[in-house]
Image (cartoon, rainbow, N blue to C red; front, side, top):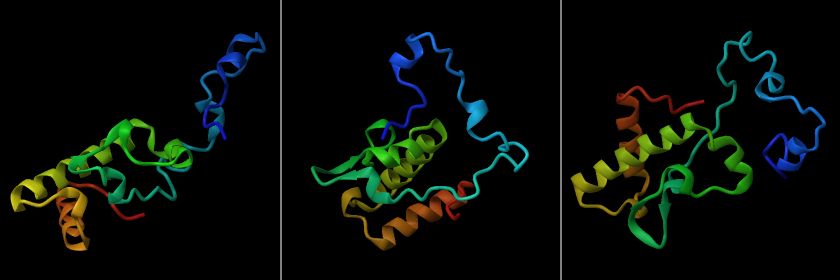
Length: 123
């Protein structure tokens, strides 16, 4: 499944595709408040890799399947991953821990740090 509305060939074929596609994806977006009804949950494990215990991987290199990538590839979601990685890095440094080994207690600490900064974590 391709997450893009058109392929490069579609754009070159002279068929006059609608651009930008955002105008036709959700015509009721603004009238419904402009906020997602069912936001996506991003698990902490997206940020870590078993190959390097002290590495956090937010942004375009994060761990996600291609279907999930359709949801998380936009800048606001990538910023959220960056915020979480920053909080996790702070925890790792403060307590001398490896981010890839974080358990429920450490993840709760990261979540509380994000909440105190104004992040919305619940759907």
